[in-house]
Length: 467
Picture 1 (cartoon, rainbow, N blue to C red):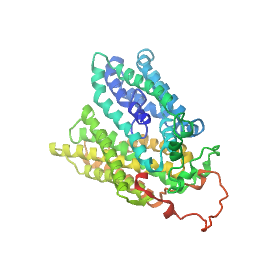
Picture 2 (cartoon, rainbow, N blue to C red):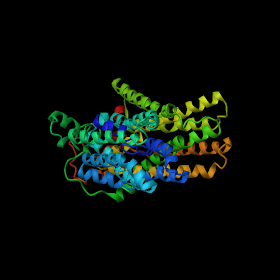
Picture 3 (tube, rainbow, N blue to C red):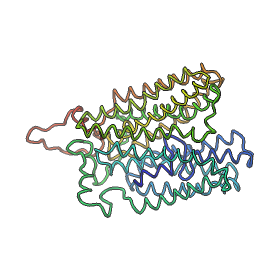
Picture 4 (cartoon, rainbow, N blue to C red):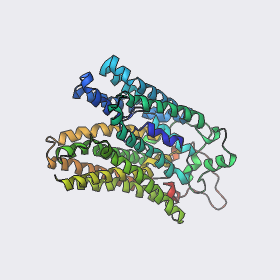
């Protein structure tokens, strides 16, 4: 539960720019409120908003690697604590150091937050029973949307109140610091390190799914072998996972950063300056996350046992091809009050249905390698975040006239194609069985009934809730 609260005060990562105790939405409010006071032009604002990524992509892979060695507990603690303290310093840096010092501060915050998602995956790989893996991943990362909804809804009011724009950093910064110490007191990196866990609970978690899921047999407390970098980067299932993550980020960032521009210039509807309306897609995403998790639970309770690989690919298809269809529909929306409402509905549906990927490729890192899940997440999230930089640049090359719906149609169709290819590759080549490089090779004694490895179809079978 404490981990689920982390993204609420730290809604960042492969879905939106942010920082602990001072999200992108806080910074947007800050930039808007202080533009006149500091006389910052559009170029300066762009540096302020993008500088977070300069540090964020750097610590993705080291974050996953270090969390596996020193424990996710401490990586999350220091990452959130330092970032929250820096958030408190943002107004001071702006007043006394100017925009250049704020850019440096934002880059350092990116360095701190780069460890968050990989460390979260490392933590979940140790604590999440196989049957609850998808559910816990979904609930944990949906906190990102919850934090976004809250800050989009209230940051404008806070900035325009008597508290002023600095309070949009002071309040979340204090929340992040409090969360850090609650996390440090209550949590442990592994079940074996938790002081109050019962033997039955520890046995259940550590042996979870071993008779049903071979991948969980790799969940071990013995000394961790060296990271098999060559094996990881030559693993077809992992490379496909990287492509799926990149495709998802490309589409998601196109939706969130370019659709508001399309709606303003083509449809005449400015949703950027409408906090509740801007928060609507995120709120719908929270609701649909719960719906998809409920669907998994319901199918399992009815005794439905299907191949785990099918489960992952089914939810991933919902999370990538439904937004694809929404983008194609947006390409044919024209100006008019009724069409504006249709466009808002399509945008909301596209963003919300993307939450199904929490039960798809998002959890596949843990499937492939419980021992290196954090490292895998660091690699894929690093690559995927370059898409958040590249996608707007490609849109800029295509759209010369922001009022031309034909040019925007090309953008939407191209993004839909990226969604299509990303999920198609995951469906064809994605796997859920543990990879051989997850642990040291061991000598296996054949069982009396005849040993040998099970085929992929057997290994990929599991309850749908494990998705």
